[in-house]
Image (cartoon, rainbow, N blue to C red; front, side, top):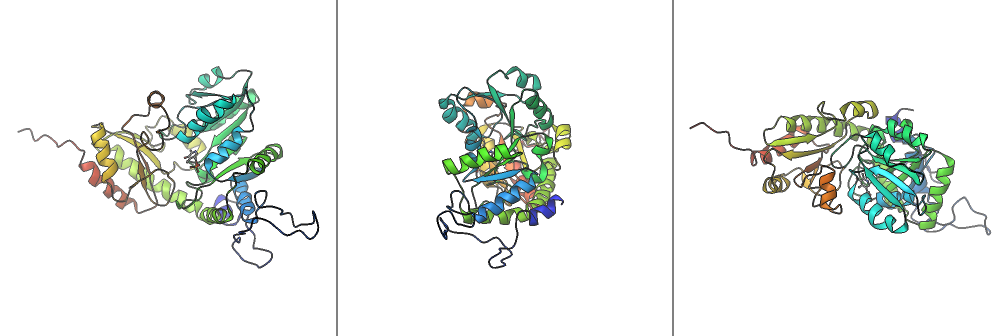
Length: 389
Ligand SMILES: *Cc1c(COP(=O)(O)O)cnc(C)c1O
């Protein structure tokens, strides 16, 4: 079955009790038992819920994984994956990491004796150099946030296999529509479903997709034992969002390509970070491992100072100033003060994240309107052309 068909049908069957085409919202905390232990496979809703189960089946099929488990947020999903480790274990991860993930690794799990090394993962020697006898896991996010660096999943998977390490990919920026990490050798794929997968900025949720039964058993154990499960209403909303995932991602790809091209040629713009541009250092790898370049773009201004960045951040009409990404509406954000505020400034600068960087999540509006919105705000920060008089 092709991907677009899967988004509409995978994991979802009409409700056997009523014939309802859409999976009902099973808003219940518990299930009747005819006699102790005599039940229909559902005992308590932290452990199993039919709406959540349909979503998990769908997600597993979209990634060609063995199984998926959903969590109350992307962070809760990441939390479960790190809980596969034990004190003394070490993780090698990319340095341009989602701010919340960096915070969890350094402020929560470091306390429990797990060590994290943040390395430039486009440089395989750096990855190898940080692997030792305690290393248990490699962790990559690609494209990275907010600099949209491209990490070669297949190459990192080879390193993971050679050292017998678990390889985790946070695929939030691509969604399974644009990138299939498991096909490229990842063992575990994590998502913030809050972003592209649900796609309508109306739900917070996360998922862990695994490649085999052993990992599924461990993650399902943690899902039930630690209890960070999503509710049935939210599970329904994500299931509904998935129906349009394939066509939404195509619209994001198309719009972002047009916006990136426009920005690249604008005199008020300094650098444009978009993997779809031939000038992007990760363009060739992106072409190989992604079926589209996604909807995220970051840029700096040619007159790169805080006052100008502020003008742009507060002067657009269609691009709303807000954290998050991946919804149908376009958003703009200032990583330094918003999404990446939890990363110390020197770490940010070391990773190449300047104080004036602006990140946009290009929505599915008409590209002409989005470009007009950027045009009016960029005009305010363009140096007037000298008339020579
Ligand atoms: C948003 C995000 C997360 C965290 O997900 P939440 O649903 O907000 O908890 C993790 N990784 C990436 C790449 C994200 O963009």
